[in-house]
Image (cartoon, rainbow, N blue to C red; front, side):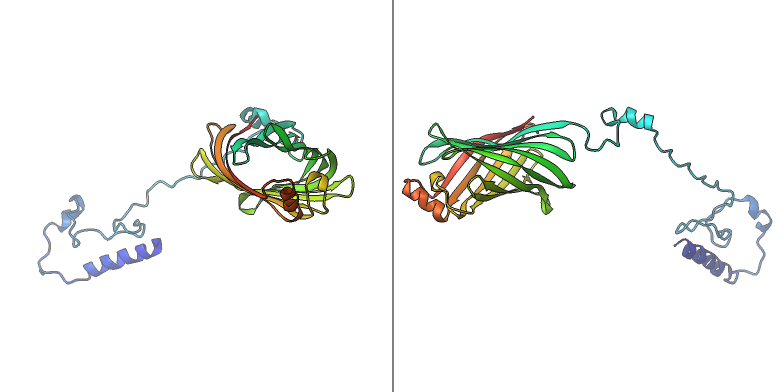
Length: 304
C-alpha cells in the first residue's frame, strides 16, 4: 500500500500542473511565493515528495528521525528465577517433590422408598509428578449397616501427561465375606476432558471383575458446576455368597449440581439411578430387594 500511495500522489499533482493557465499574465507574487504560507490552492502548492505518508496526501521532509532498533530483553539468570519462584527453585528436579492430596468426590446422604442411607467415594495420593501412592475407597450404608465397602492401595506411574498406570491390591469389607483382589488399571483425562478410571481385578478364588467410571464437569458459572457420572461393573463368574452374577452386573448414572463455596468445599444436590442386570438382578429378587432404584441425594465434595 505504501508503494501505491507514493505513485498515486505525484501523478495527481502532475495532472494539476499540466493544466493550461487561466490567464497569460504572469503572477506578480510569483517571486515571493516561497515566503507565503500555503493556501491550499493546487496551483500554488508544491507537489508532495516521494516520502509522503500512505493515504495522507501530504508531503514529509527527509529529515524525519529514524527509529533506532530496541535492544532485546536479556534472558533471566538463575538467581532471578529463584527470586521470582522461591517454591520452585529447582527446575530440573521433575518428579522429586513430595506432595499429597485427600479428596472426597462424593460424601452424601439419600432418602428413598426402601429407607435412608449414606454413600461415599474418595481417594488420596502421595508422591511426585511421575510416581505416586494411591488410596481409593468407596462404600454404602443403609439402615445403619454397611452394605458395601472397599479399600484399594495402588502404585501409580505417569505414562503420559494425562494418564497414570496403577497397580496394587483391593480389599472388600462387604458385602459378604471379605476378600482380596489384585488390581491393574489406568486413570486420567480422556479427550474433551472426560475423567476416566478403568480397573481390572483378579480375586482369590478365580473371580475376576472390571469396573469403569466416567465423569465430566460442566462449568455453568465460576462456582456452579454440573457433574454427570456413569459407572458400570462386570464380573467373570457367579458369586452367590455376595449376590453377584456373571456378566454386566450393575450400572449407575448420576447428575450432581454443586456450588463451590471455595475450591476445597462444595455442597451439592443430585439425582442418581442404579440398576442391576442378569444373575445379579436375580439374586436381588430372591433376597426381596429391588433391581433398580432412583433417589435424590445431597452431600458435599471436599479436599485438603
